Image (cartoon, rainbow, N blue to C red; front, side, top):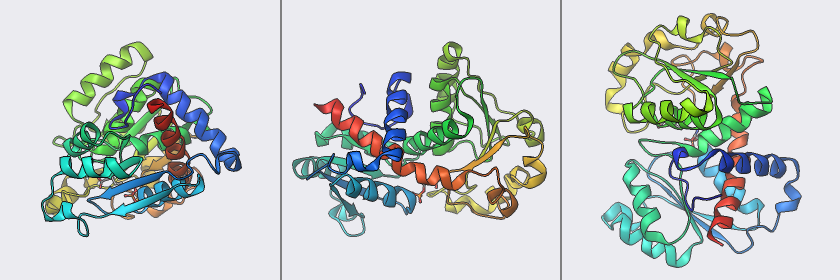
Length: 309
Ligand code: CP
Ligand code: NVA
């Protein structure tokens, strides 16, 4: 892999992605081969926001490979009492081998990468969730056997970290990602512009279609995320009104291709953005996706360490 950090999917190229997916598949099939790969290595995990999957998958990935992970919450560290991200980065870089951070401001993972002197992984920021996209496309490959020519339709709040990384990864892989959302919830214009530019070479297209029924016609994958992301809880009431017509329910799911799969980064707010019958549908792959966080990130960690050698 050519990059030394994973802050956003757009920092990678197709070769990097193929390397991560191939290694992740091998690690999933043959975990015993990697039992000692991170002997004596320590990961610092900074969490400014809640997490189940990201915390557990990184902690288990480190443990399975013979290393270990430290959970650092601003509540219990000096970050919460005003120590700067830059100073924290320089201190952690003297002690740990790799840093993973879930932050409010994307600029904070950039500072960690600039100042720490060790690999840094973005575990979700206001702009991107690259680890989620790696697991998502590993899951798509497992279920569809290919990338090129597929069409993902993301339904709901599209000005969202998960959507942005899904789009950037689709652009590099030749997978079209369309968004079904109302005005005010479009993906960030700079992300759309970058994806369209890359998509001109890979064959992927990126459109916003406000009518969800129109949008999901011909979809190979329908993707959903919460309507109220962490950090925008104060907008909850308005978001539930604005996004009301963008629920992925059985009626909408059945408008897509007959082999369409349902994906969601989780946690799901069942009964809001998605219904139980779609979450638990035979063509829902949400728990494969969650499991693949572990395998994709284990591969990512090894690729990053290799890039620093
Ligand atoms: N999908 C995801 O990142 O889940 P967590 O918030 O539980 O880590
Ligand atoms: N968009 C969601 C993703 C959670 C994994 C959020 O930021 O809260």
